[in-house]
Image (cartoon, rainbow, N blue to C red; front, side, top):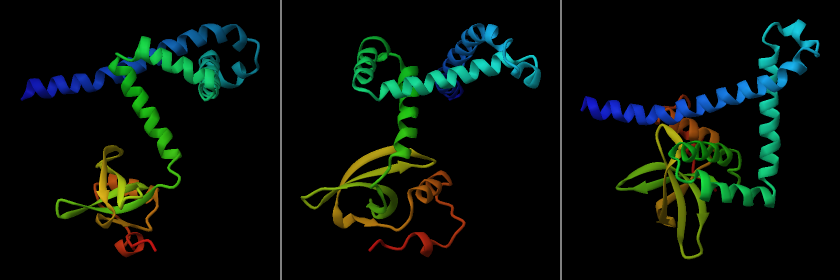
Length: 193
């Protein structure tokens, strides 16, 4: 039992440590580039001795923003697909970072998704109503507490889904808090009309 728990902990920490190491090396590389420029800027007298590190982090953020803009273009998407299939696809660390980033992007783009109560195994769970299908079925994402963007996609008959007036932010908070809420249920769980 202890060996399995230790192994699970190491497997959990390894990708995180790898990401921290990569970011640390990126900051060092940017600091080497930023050092000559940092001495020319008046920020050194304001910030102090570590102005090249601050400039390096700023450069890294700007490069990341620019790369994000390029990634949204058609050629950028092609380059990403190629790198994922040929270089990065087999690395579990990359898959972990990618899934976290995609989850954060999906939270920002949850337009049209409604919160619902979903009848499963004789009980009710919070779910995200993704789509109502023309054949009387629905596509539902059922989150797993305490992670609101991790869970299962299910196809259920529409009569097992009760849309709510609760916002996505409230639903995600409810999932994160393992169902504990600070407001009266009638305020957030009234059926949507």
